[in-house]
Image (cartoon, rainbow, N blue to C red; front, side, top):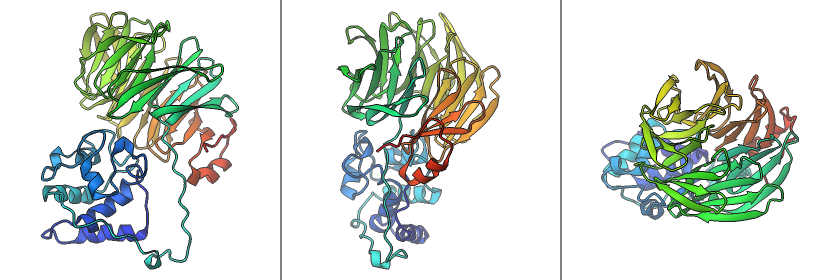
Length: 458
């Protein structure tokens, strides 16, 4: 979300931070420039993230899909502060936190009543150090929010804003684009028989949406609704007769796959539910939530069996072991954990050391030998699942939202907040393909090894 607009805005910010603390904070001179530099790229324009616009004072105070962002006089009750401080996840701006002095300034402004003294004055290009030159504004790609490999490894599905892109493997050719989704596609999964691709998301604060696509010809089978907020997780039961969804509305739904009907509503979580998975045996459904808990359910009946506790912050992702009744979870507490599940309870058999930043995704390799995690700091790490030792690290220029190993245990697909999708070799972490390249880095990507044939998102 951080984009440097100009040296002039940076100068405004530095002057603002140096001003005497005795004078009231100026929205026009001090706060608006910080928002312009760090927030408006995502929270501006015709389709702002979470329907929160930070580009004007009135829009900022109006709030968005999550309610009011600013509570005048109460910074600790203001969700804007919670997100920029990292008390709510994902921490904003994604890919680069504000400086402590900037956060302190915004806190002080809110404490003083969050008043306005007018909108920020427009920048005069003639006074810019770049006057006389033409500044090119690069395209901004929608985030690569979710990934799914087909069982045979011949297709990689990428969920982005309002569409799913299907890439043929190993050529990397874009086969087709599945369009018409309501908002970001946050979860995708191929059915166990490979015939159907489920893509789930929805509009924050409005409702969830699931679209079921025919993989063979790209036709839409049906669209399902039911959740009161956007969907973050989707999973097929191994027999393909049932699937489950979880949502920001704090609920989990179990669906009859043949009828396309919800058959159970699971409402025990106290906060948004961000991840779920059926175990390999099909006996258990595990769900992870912002309430820091993992709940384990009977996959047939939807009865809650027990709750697993251990993470100290929200559970951001959850995945099942390919052959055992075991799950891996990751959290905003910067750790990942492995749990063994039984009918009468579960055990945390492994906990990782705390990592530098929030973990956004955790997956097993198809052979179960490796745990792969991704982070807001732009790193993917490969871990030995048997002992928890770190094997290697793969660096990415921006925050990573999704990782997934291909069925042949050869490649790691990495989906970035900046919209990029790359493939790296599991064996050594070397980049092997750029399926979607960020425009400003397109030239660099073109010169990198690309055995799969890069396909740029246009």
